[in-house]
Image (cartoon, rainbow, N blue to C red):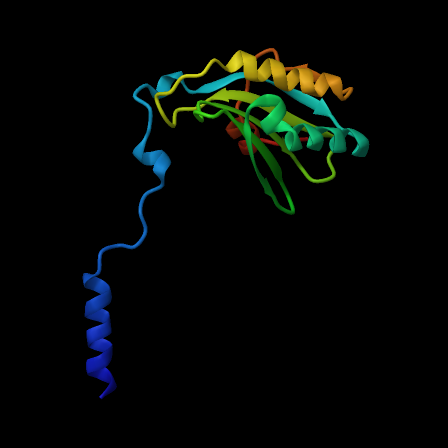
Length: 154
């Protein structure tokens, strides 16, 4: 008696439409992917006190910078993200837990066609760092977070 029930369940599962839908970002890709990429980047030197100051920048991101926050924290990597209201500008900080430095970049995304100027967000972020006594050592050539994740953070 169990075989017909299993056969019915298998047929039902196979005939059902997929439950998962593609992520919204893939449905709203911008019309010009070439515009996406890093605009500026650098390295922050962080002792434990400086890292706490950096975290306060992220905690105050919405009222001070006009950006929303997200983070991914694991055993081997920490990524803190700020994004603009139209999601066309992203500032991210990447570090290894316990590391004395962090990579920071501002990037133009290609999620939607809404274009926001990235310099005002970057300037406010740098001002928030400066107000807390933190200084970013700028890269001569902007690098993306993806480039950093594919290489080493050391």
